[in-house]
Length: 128
Image 1 (cartoon, one colour):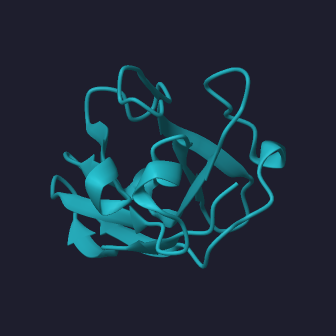
Image 2: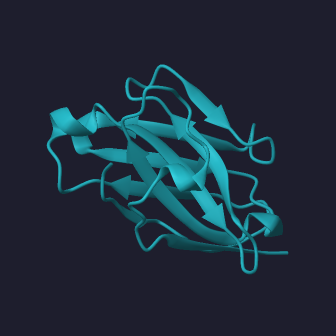
């Protein structure tokens, strides 16, 4: 699995947009390209939930029902970076967002317990 740093969070009003970034600076470009990458989020007092996943070759994406049609996950393997474009944000999207990655025999891997490298996350706050 890979260690990453998340960024791009902030405070926005409902209906606004944010783009989160997740960069893996401790691995080579070639190694990063072998990782499937996933975003999770955790709201105060709640469990960590799956948000979106992208396969290592960007051929496949998967989204939680609550964000489908509003969020878009993408990656730039040349920059060791994964993005989460979040549009039409709602107050219920307020959470700390985490990015994780790894090489697994199956995809997607949407259980938090599948991952052991977690960064600090980035806070997203959406006000009504």
